[in-house]
Image (cartoon, rainbow, N blue to C red; front, side, top):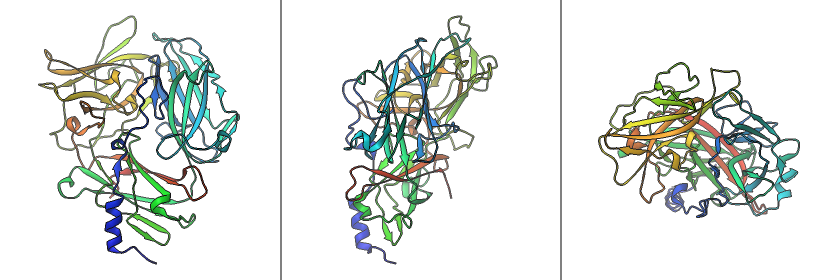
Length: 434
């Protein structure tokens, strides 16, 4: 058993210090709004409620094990309410979500594209919509290698007429990941959550882990603040130890706010009233307040996700109503250096234009109206400074090391002679764990 020297550790730590993925040059945001993006994106305004999860597991990440028999299911609604000719295909990507330099037949078995033939129309709803479903892998299309994939939905068999893109991952269970969290140090003691972990390679020896491995850490399914370029501090036989006191840290943040819209007949805790409207459902929420100065209080949440569900009818898929939901955030003055957004899985973990809040000076509050399908929603209010891509929830929500979050570690490996990034291990866990 041998470990690297203290000098080597310091050198490597300084040379390979982790950095947020959002801070790197963003290759995935083209200037043309209709151009293909290798990220989760909705290209048409009439597309709503896009979900990609494991079949039978509502709160799962879009991750499955290779050849495990598990499937992913994509669901989305078309608010035009007609029947369109949607097609789908998938693209293999590298660890940085750029197209892999391999041929389609190297990662895909079966057809290269297919028609979306599973759809149904809404029933007894004021908002008419058509619900579409795609499952992968299926009898006609199977992924045959691990790694990152982009699912692409497009119109009329025209690959350039993109409607939806969604990221998903296929992994091989080659290495064991043993994680835990710890508090930050120094000034970050009460606000940060550090991620430390070991990777056991006993079943799958790794050569040159400092160059052939790429490790990413994700918080609550978000991609904007992913930590990348994570390097081991010690290599000890079959164990890679990631124990840095700096770099692998996230803001603890705060527990998510939530609203229960599973019934549009019975008022739940956070709903102020149902607004009379014969054209569409309308819900007015109770005003929220900033929580930055509040002490930490624990309460149940689903780490920013949402669940489509109706208690007013039989089918949550085609009987759930859409409602215009009015959000209110009380503030004495508006920000002059940036904007406020409603944020969570409901916004695809992005600062999207229809989730941007407007300040109403006469009411001393930020407001936003968002069209949402019936269900249970977690959300937060975030701030993004002008000319910045950094999304900051701590400005309005507070920041606590005690906050419960879900973290996922992804381990990619490209050994000599392989021309793509294999995903050889994935581990999700809840924090804090100690």
